[in-house]
Image (cartoon, rainbow, N blue to C red; front, side, top):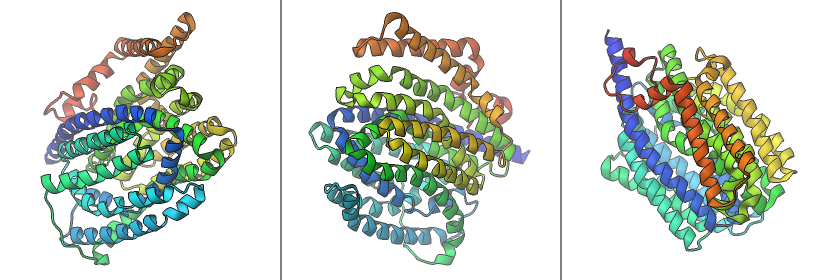
Length: 497
């Protein structure tokens, strides 16, 4: 009885915090989404290409910036007295070294891509590493205590501030420096807010034995995340010289637009997934149940946007981005179709990690590395469209492989995953048919009017299909965000984390 009551309290606490977290993060992501689309109109494909060249090595180093200590701290059942001072000390040392590596490595990055301007940009971005140690521990503590509302409020403020900074500078013609400034503002403001709203002070220490067990667990998590990020970053690094700045910029713009719905939503729920599912690391059946329900709910909002983007891409690109981005239409269609597979993989990996099986995430990442890199090198020879085809094939293969190895942790299968996604898939297919049918019957309408009509037809057909054939799933999803204080027994088959 006590165990059941404890489980009820945990779920209610997660749901309560998650509701506010989702609201705050959705607002922040919508603002960021709109800002990103507007910013694209004021910068060139060359700027986007340079930004990708700059961020690829940066993101590889960022994977080493915590050594997984933050995730180990979140998942740890108990924290020893010496853990926090030693974690802080090692974070200061590690990020100091990474700062020096990126600051003085800017000349190498510029030489590799034959873009001299990258050197000064790299020196500016290097200061991110000096800021990281001051936000890792307070963020991890907030996650441990499931304070999603508080943390997401900070992220809302920093996200909006960064978006405004980037947008204003882009409009003023700052080009790539607008993107760099937005990143720096976001990191600095987050630290300031954490210090003001969640004060903490720790005298750093460097006792390795005190954090060795956390580094051992966190290191495996970092390895999995590193392989995943290395795969994508290496793909950009390898194909960059082949495509050149302009074609790379076109592909990256299409990739980021296709990824926007997923990246924005995963940014909302990822900070919740790991700490929430960690509470069920010893209750695998419950975790499997909530995994399936959560994935089904997420798909209801994600799939129609992904498939809808592919349907309206020919009208969306010239209207929203401008004629200079017309070459991004076909890559955007292909990449949007690949996103449902990426969504499934992106959701499964942190859940697997929370169960203590980071080794399976490593295997999933290695599969992505083995598949994407050769396909990307081949596809790059056929321009941005060839590279988009390579990404589509890779996402499909990796998604199926990740589902297959997840069965080691949960009682799930391709059939069960399909059942969770079925309502969203069917409704999205009907929606796509209605949108494409409208184009066929009335002809493709250019301009903002045609785009609005297609979006309206798509939204209406999706909602009506869902409401007609999957009304209970729709109502359960809506009810989830307004339910208060119900126990798992009363909602076990109609709710998710």
